[in-house]
Length: 258
Image 1 (cartoon, rainbow, N blue to C red):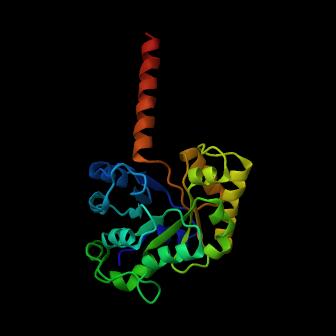
Image 2 (cartoon, rainbow, N blue to C red):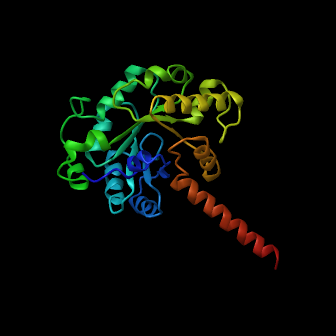
Image 3 (cartoon, helix red, strand yellow):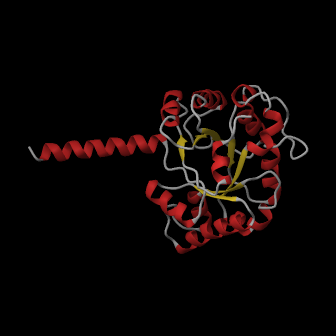
């Protein structure tokens, strides 16, 4: 089976970089896949109009590179997880997981028996990953469950015991709302910082991957220093917006000097 680059990086004790795809555009997916990230996450939960067909097309575009293709599914639904894994995703991020039972549901959907209940039918996956995909998928596929509520933070120890999951992925905005504080980027509220630290600490103690959604490269660097192992640096939309604003600012500055 084609190795999972991100899992190989984690086995070496190093953090993995990632980009985030919100548009579902295959040209953009191909461009971001060639940018040098270790992984690219296709967002089916909050991406604009990213349905299964678009996700599959983006997975095909990404497969021209060595980058690890991942998908955030729209819900903790085995059907969505099966769709994207059969299409060649090497990892899934599952939103709003609040209990051991919900984590077990997510982890089991990612694993073939006897470790889970994923149905055999890797249509595109066998082309992308190799003929021995079924024999090795349980070891190579990534399952990250999102921690986005106070309930989940309070239940981390039991969630960590769910079979089939590889780590926690903090959704900082929803977590902030659950804590009763504004969902600000790079949130410095002590309650938010303490919750994120707890997620990190429990993950490390349980041998899982601590991951978090960040506001940009500066926060990502700090989170890596903190010990998080997976922090997408930004999305296609955020990069376009930031690049556009920087170019316009530079132009206006040049014009002002004339």
